Image (cartoon, rainbow, N blue to C red; front, top):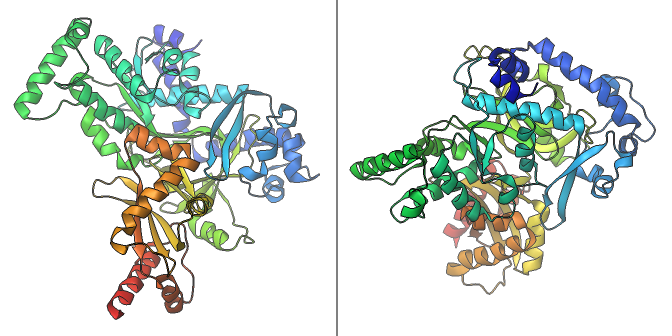
Length: 539
């Protein structure tokens, strides 16, 4: 029986156990599942052409040998085979290929194959997220096959396009607008159509990137206001309870002297957000909708790997999606400075509360990626939680690894990308440092500190704005996702600060080392700015 049939029979305990029972696992139980599934994956992967392209004739027989023989990998190790979409080389037969941006300015896309078993696991874990988003206590949830969800997701071939596909196999939740129509609409059109449909028929769920959910929420407020797109003729098509709700909301907002918010019109059962930078938007989203968003984490290569519970205080990893290894932050940075250094990895039962880790994944169920550095950082926030009665590790998402700057879950700015932009622009930039910073509203932005060539004929008073405009043009040129930040979120993420000539050289004299170009530690950046100020005083 699928979820819809079990809901009809009111088999609520069975539903919870099937989809959310992983939360009751002991640490030993979690690791048994991990190791059993890895034994199967080791055999599939090692015998495949893809596996042998990395193993070079070796055949590990167990987990210990696998971790010894398989090096830590990145997408470059798979690109030739995966971008050619060669199923004969893969550990399992791909049913669908998912796509995302790889690296602006160097590689346009990367693709990942999904087997039937991977999709089945994805479906079960998507349903678990749906259930947990409505839960307010263990075993308690509120899901119906008559529920409706606002479509705030990128369609296939992007990973979020799997969400409606997977849910459709288990329950008839309706997407507003329908997926078949939404894929042919622009982001703005989907918002308007989805909102009008929700006003006519109500809304129970919302799922999107945290940054996108925030942009959609603001646009819903605008559409429902006095100058919004909800006309009298369309209002008359709404259900009576929605008309009454709108009239009551308008009266309340007028008395309180504020704009209408989505919570005035809709009482969501569940609210899910994915992607990066969700911590920047969660509080505002809760204020707008009256419900705390539940964070989950998913990626193109691994699919959905973790979710929060009703406590909303950390994510638990699903034991059947990937096999998890962890590199400490210190070892990750040491490896970045010294590529010959091989960092040690730790398993789920070896993580330490408070430690930040780079995540390493082996995708199970015939997946292509083994010991794969997906580029994400997590902090372990606890090994047990009395509040939701779990005894397995709990994590919070930190950010991308330092050499990738991710803004609002949209763009991945790399060192190569920045170098490409500088080269294409022809700007006289001699030295630079790039960091991710946050403004007064706690919104992320991308800050470049640059030093120009000594003979650069640029008016210093205007140079920051001029450089910002020129660099932005080239970032948009090489990176579609960067363009979408402005188009979809209305965000111009770049700030530029011009440092005095000689700042970097003076820094190196004072510290006896070069500053890291991508996301240097706060104390190093502060020292660089102090050096710049001292040069200003001297001159």
